[in-house]
Picture 1 (cartoon, rainbow, N blue to C red):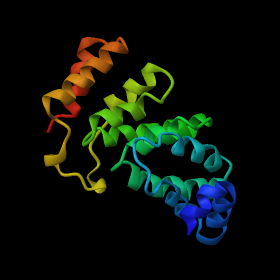
Picture 2: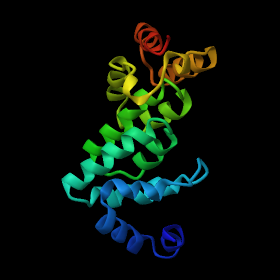
Picture 3: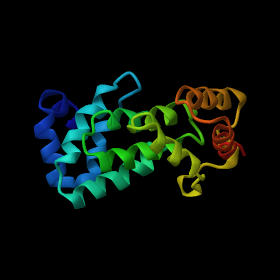
Length: 171
């Protein structure tokens, strides 16, 4: 029922869900979408920015737990953000996502303006086990390492920093 309503009048559906179920329930607006639905996160982002700070926090905490496991949403949502503090927080989730999905995690990190901030986040990345990823799922294959090196090289990062970052994503 909500999905049909959402397709006909997404703003009214958004307001109803927020009022009846709370900010964390707004994640239902991301259910059922795939990586081909890149505009869905961009639609949701400005609406979350308009919420009260406590509602934003409720939504972001719920989103983090889900989206680190499905990092497509991190970059899709980040592309729609205007608030630099929320953007930095959300895009930084990509450092966690990279431990199991290098490509989509990197796409999230790229939403952060400024190479130096991206590199700082990558240099400080440590795997957070609370997100349920065991080392067996660690993004450590040769293709992932090559992708990470290539991206860092494109960003003109020094070779020693590149190798230090790549080492963080090895088991």
